[in-house]
Length: 99
Image (tube, rainbow, N blue to C red; front, side, top):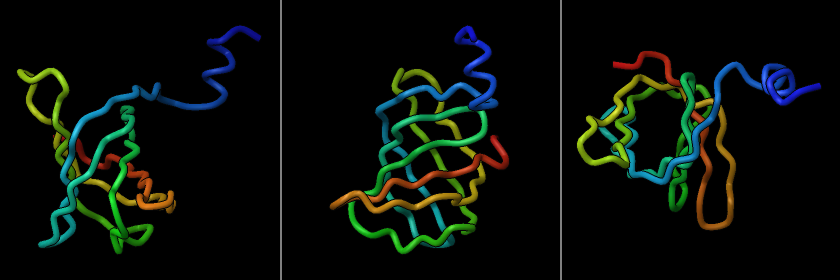
């Protein structure tokens, strides 16, 4: 099996590792995040502390570009995973409406 076949069996979209800031807005609450990776359908975020989020919550995200001149990515999101990691939480979001 070549790497392309292996990849297509694992994911529909390539994940790109990034190290940039993001803001997750849930109602009136804004949570500063670090974006660890992103794909066409979702992102993995890191939050310092306990976010209080629940799987299935809906919100809005703005992910800053690491390039400086590129506009931030903005999208509606659905929380699909929350995993405690010591002092942090890793949060998986599905991008439901990229603007």
